[in-house]
Length: 233
Image (cartoon, rainbow, N blue to C red; front, top):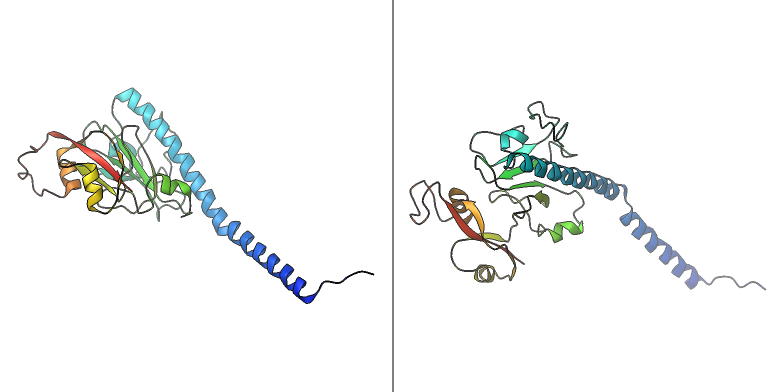
């Protein structure tokens, strides 16, 4: 004689099926998969771009100036945007037939940053991943935002080998130590990138200790200063 399921057993089976269906819906939702596809394109493009920029550096001894790689550069600026489909985008041959463009441009743009020198010694490129739970966001230290000092609204990027992405918990220090700085904001020092060289005005802006061309006599205008770049966690 066949034994039928009891009502309690049926309810348990139904509950398990519903939970599994919810997990599958969350894990394999169309939006999540679309976001991951966009992010995969971003990562591939920026990885390729970083490789060709290194080729550019090997040939010229400098990283590209904003005018060499951005469609909206202006004299004296240290940040600008990259998008090969913009009519004002410069020719980057023979390194790339066309510069990449963020999959969601112009809502999300690739941001290019240099040190502002006539022969840039480093670069950073920032963008935003659509899938906010991507583990690389945390690995890069961008869970609280990355980007130039005035705009830490990005969560992903690539850089030249001699620098790191600027995070919300980073500081350019000329006095004290990274341990003391991180302690002052209730965190611990996770990384100290030895000494990095920043342009005088750039480090002044990062520190927020100067305004105007004649202040801070310890740091003469147009001279380089060396400062710790601290990362806290």
